[in-house]
Length: 196
Image 1 (tube, helix red, strand yellow):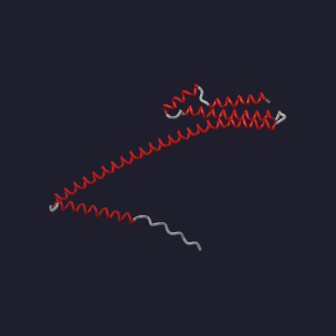
Image 2: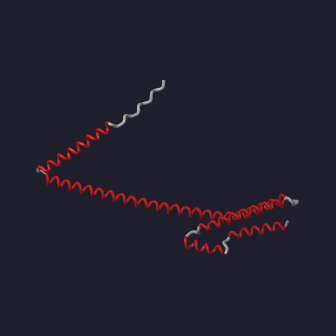
């Protein structure tokens, strides 16, 4: 019995020690400090390590429970195994919570960065559209001013009257064509017959 308890205690200590970063894991921690967060590969390694530790903890607990059924005092052995599992699980859970908090922070930063990029892209497109609209409005004003100057210069002359009549005739033709297009539209579909 003592031997099994010691082996489980050694496992718990090993599992707890496994949660602390080793010398090899200190290098990614240094790169994390430089870039802000660990790389995707480093995060996958930590995720896999936590999963392996969780599985090892559960396997050890199952093995301890099987061994307890060979003892005379099964209940006490099971309670001790359960307590050891709870202690080891608590340490592992703290590590998992830190890792999950870091993952949430990384995802939040990525979403924030993406939103900023989309917003800046939308602002750039909006500025381009405003600039294009401003250029078009400026061109229309320039054309209108040029036409007014021509009209003013030709006012009272036969050439001015002729051009004015030409513009009015063109306007009448376009209005007439518009009316004809409206008349030639297909009639609307008939209403459905009421059911009796």
